[in-house]
Figure 1 (cartoon, rainbow, N blue to C red):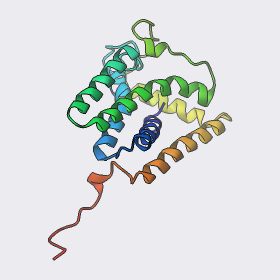
Figure 2 (cartoon, rainbow, N blue to C red):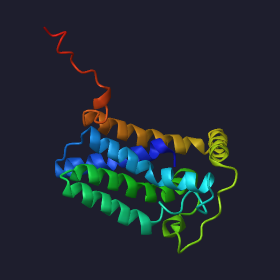
Figure 3 (tube, rainbow, N blue to C red):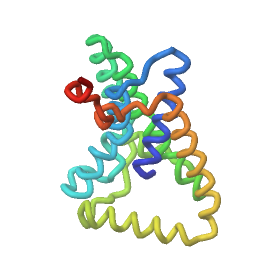
Figure 4 (cartoon, rainbow, N blue to C red):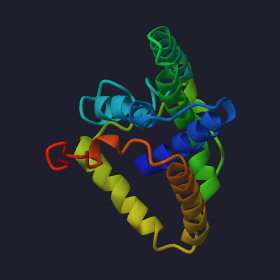
Length: 192
C-alpha cells in the first residue's frame, strides 16, 4: 500500500473516532497520525532493503507482537501526559496500517488475503532484502506504473478515488488540521 493510502485510511478512522468521542483533532494529533500510519514502513523497509537486518519490508514493525505493545505504550504514555488524543491518533494510524496492508492487494488487484506478515517471527517472511532501498523502491514504482496500464486499473482507480475523496472530505470538514504551522499568522506590527 502506498504512503498516501495509509494516511487516508488512518485519517478516516481517527476522524470518525473524533466525531464519536467529541475530540478535537489538532495539528499535533494529525502529525502523530501521519507518523503512525507510516511507522511500520519507516522501520521495516530500510532495515530490510538497505541493511538486510530483517527478512522483509513487512516483518518486525508489521508484526502484531511488536505493533500492539508499541501502540499501547505510546498511547498510555501520552495519555498520562494529558495528550490522549495524540496517543490514540498515533496508535490508530499504526494499527490501521497492518490490516490495510494485508487487505489492499486482494481488494484492489485480486488474490488471497494472508495474515503471515502480521505473525512474524512465528511465520517466516519471504526474503525481500536484495538490491538496496532505492532499487527496491524503483522496482515497486515500475511495477505500479505497469499495473496502471492494465484493464484491472479501473477498479483500483475507483477504490483510490473513494478512499482519497472520503479522507479529503473529512479532513476539510474537520477544519484541515495539520496545516497550522503553514498558515499565515497575523503580523501584530502591520495591524497598527
